[in-house]
Every structure is written in C-alpha cells, then in structure tokens.
Image 1 (cartoon, rainbow over the protein chains, first blue to last red):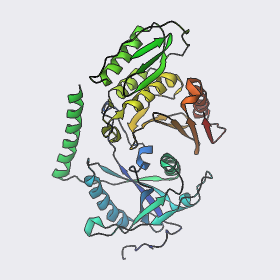
Image 2 (cartoon, rainbow over the protein chains, first blue to last red; image 1 turned 60 degrees about the horizontal axis):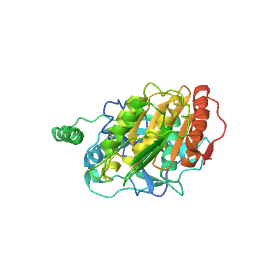
Image 3 (cartoon, chains in turn green, orange; image 1 turned 135 degrees about the vertical axis):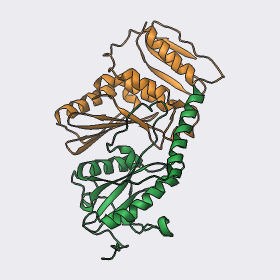
Length: 184
Length: 192
C-alpha cells in the first residue's frame, strides 16, 4: 500500500495532528529539577517572531505508522539542527475535530497544510500550521496546551543517537555547566 | 541605592528597580535580599540596606516549605545579558525580581513546589499540579498571567502590578480553591 499522500489544500476531517515534543533547556540555577514526562506549556511555545504554530499531519484517520516514521526521522534531524541540539521525544497527537471545534467553547483553530520543500530529510510533505488569527503569543500556546493535554495522546518516538549526536549533547551540557561555574 | 520603611524595601540602581515586602527586623531575609542584589550588581555601585520605621509591618503568612529552594533557583538563574535571558537558561534581572516578588507574596497559596523554566520571550513559567487540575503562572516584569485547567476547562487571569499583593493573593486564593475542589466560576478575568 502506497504512503498516504495528503491533500495540500485542506486538512481532512478525521486527520490526526501532532505537535512535536522536544526537550527544553533548563534554567541554569534550576538544573536540580527533574523535568519528567509531563506535557508542559513550553511544548507549545514557538520561537519569538513566529505567527503560526508548527504541526505534523500524522495520518488520514489515525496515526499512520509509515507517516509516523517519515515525520519522526525529520523531527530527529530538526532536533539536531537547533543552535543547541535537543532531544526529540515524540508527539502529542489530537484528532483534528478538537481543533476545528474546541469542546470548551473557545475559538476554532485554522490549521492549514504547509508542506516543506527540500531533499531527503529536509522535505516534509506532512507539515502543517495552526494560524494564530489574532491570538497573542501566550493565548495561542495556552489554548493549544489545554486541548492537547485534555484530548490528546502521547505518541513516543525512540531514536538511537549516533556518536556525534551524543557528543553534541554532552558538549551542550558541559558548556552550560562551565557558564554557570564561571559566574560563581 | 536602597532604602526601606518597616515592612517594605525599595531598591534602585541604574538598571533595575525593586519594591516589595520585607518584614521589619527580619535580618536573615534582609541579608538574603542584599546578597541577591549584590550578586546581580555590577561595578557601578554598591547596595546598602537602610532600616526605616515609618510603616507598620504587613502581616503575611509564612512562605511555603519549598519557597527558599525556588528563590535560590531563580536568583542563580539571573543575568544582566538580555540575549542570554531569552535562551531559556537565564532570566533577566527584571523577570527574576518579579518572580521573587510573586513567590514571596503568594507561595503559601500555591498548590506545591513548581517546575520553573524560562520562555522564549524571557518570562518565567512556573507549573503546579493541583488535586483537580494544573496551574501555570507566566511571570513577566510587568504582568503575571495565571492559567489553570480545572476539569478540562481553561481559566485565565491576568494580574497587573496596579492590583498589588492583595490583588494577586485574592485571585490566587480563588484559583487555589478551584484546584482543590474542582469547582470554578469565571473563565477569564483581568485584575488591574
């Protein structure tokens, strides 16, 4: 069976939409905190200056395993491409109906297909955007956070790190520790 | 320079200003604040605590057991570099001071020890787990946003400095009660 080719005009009514879960940097004075696996508001905060929230289309009517693997490989690459490499832990996935018609009565979200052109792992035909449409930075994040935490499921993704990726993590942690030490 | 009246302390340097509660004759607390201010001070001046006696100390319930730990985490994450402050690893001095004031004013009302982190906008985010829901506080230098999810319903409150400590405590009391019982009233309020 061929890989699902998503409609690039609109999101289907039964599609499953995922938000990538990357680990986030911890405050330098709070490294003793244990982040755990709880979904946090930070998972829905975009970079400064962005006016749309990135999402992945995970399947036409459920989480499609092949789509998941396709997007997962790209998410792992994206995790390594951050200025400070992060770890990709999977997605929080929600049925599109909850975004189109939020059960608690909030404004509906406009989600539009936004395929990314490129070669190999730089291409993502399943990429989508949720538009802010007048919501401010924290409004958007808190509303999505509420919907995904209440109506979503976590879809984990395990990826074996290469030696280079492991080294980049160790290096990032070491640099953080050195910065902190130099301040003391 | 820094001056105090009984019950409050105000500090002002070239780059920041602090005005907040400090129980009179609480030497240990004064020392901590002085140490903190000194730590974030650069070479252009020194900080002195001067005791005054114009106002009676305002009674405040004792802070939560985790307050000092969170205070230490915030203080040690403070930086003068604005670029670092948006990296998620550091907090600007203004945000750190706002966060310290928030916890000092209301730690006894909060559901438990928070998980804290920085936002890409440079604010401090503190997340709490309550019996019947979750509470997320987004603390910036000028505004604090309280966002709770109780029984699947989002509740948002915006706290502005004009409301003072009393305004913050009254909003938090209401939310804390909702987090404990699962019952809630208004969906969105703004406290000015």
